[in-house]
Image (tube, rainbow, N blue to C red; front, side, top):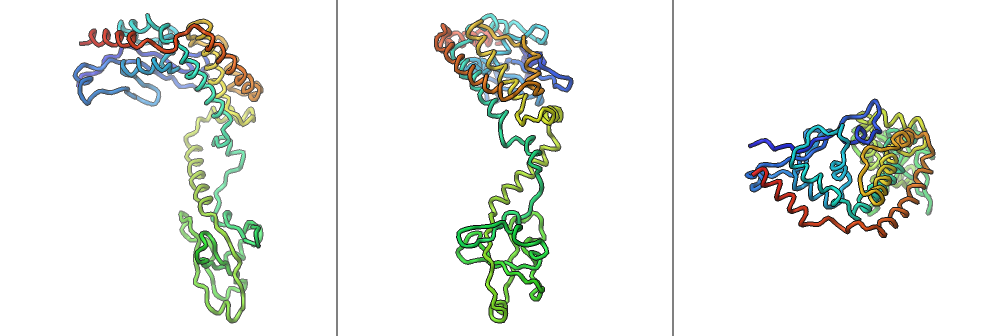
Length: 351
């Protein structure tokens, strides 16, 4: 197969915004033109992912994303010259028309991404905040409850581990998750305890309860409910957490540990950047990729400012920017004929 023709390649992300740190990766994005035979057959590719840090979009797909006001794609039309590595004449055709891709759709795309960053920043399920909750490996016993009338109490608050090691369980018919527990303090029946030897098992151990327990000892079982779904969820979360500990972005984790605000400053950096860019599109009719307030954005990332106040300001700005777009003279959407003509000309240049 003939290799694709790369018509644009640039450094993107924090390196382009000017918000990079010593530990920041260098990311690349670009655009390629696939050869005609592959376009007409099943070999057409919308994108090529060289690595997690380097990705290219086929020109047709790139133009489609531009029509939807995709923020990342729009940035490629306004990259600082020092970031651009390859720029061929085909890409120049698009750049000369770049202002035509700035439409009222930019509010939904830029502001939508900004809103999503707020939610991510405050996400209560962020694994970097789990550390504060002292995540520890639990057993099925942590999810068992003693039933007393219409109330329940944690099993481990009512009985010691030593007592539970000498206990036996029996299923209660037609009672999902309900068990009868029998305490054998003198270890007469040598029950095996409530937990299976297999640590991967999420089920409780069931014993055969001798008839003598009722006839000679006249004992009644203690009713126990086991929240199996809760334990299985814990196992899944714990496994994910261990994987995260091994693969986490150490610097990002250290940043949040340092400012102790339990809000991800990096998400809020992107939120502020996206809102500023959304406003500049409607007021300056351009996209400023290199951020003039890079240091202020880095202060947000590092948590050197009150992050809750950043969120409140962002929510206020969303309303202001929405109003600006409603009153603006920007077109509602990109002219389809313009995009089609650009694509046709690029295809003919490579036919």
